[in-house]
Length: 232
Image 1 (cartoon, rainbow, N blue to C red):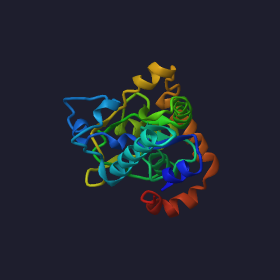
Image 2 (image 1 turned 120 degrees about the vertical axis):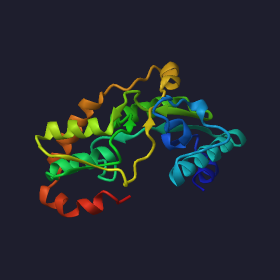
Image 3 (image 1 turned 90 degrees about the vertical axis):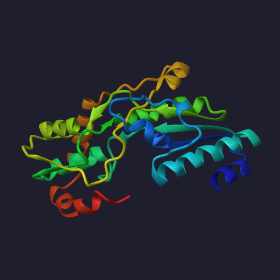
Image 4 (image 1 turned 45 degrees about the horizontal axis):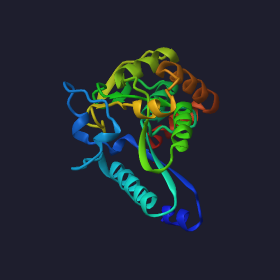
């Protein structure tokens, strides 16, 4: 409906916020066969990650159809695990920061902690989006994510160390874990625009933790944390 309204209103360019969740789950499950996900990996027989991934994939396809059949330029940006100031506790990095902020003990980590993610700082997401927007044409998709992989367990240890919180880490394998390994290949956008992520995870984490501490109350977060972790 939004894309149709854009065409009817004479919008010249649409930039769609897609996701790394459009990539096939089977390419992210084998720890002995690590695959850096590139744009060509999305194709028949599609195997997106859950309802969210399928919704994003259908959005990409709808937009590409409008770009082909209507007078509108379009591009899809496949974001990979964005984090940073103003993110919410329902996402892993902020959840870990919140747990350290309230001095949770034991310190809970969802899954086994062996999952690997390429957390991408928000300023890199924004810059990548602007660069991709300049290429808007036929609805082509571009990965926007760092190629720096970090284990969830290692991220948790970094949060604990920087916060000064000493706690035992308790893994919760029964909780939602997601794919074993999700890392973007960002070379397509890099080759066409020169864009590369500038913020290393350790530096972005420090900036995010400083923001979180500055704007939140320990008492408030401690009271609401169980709900915050699950809210969308």
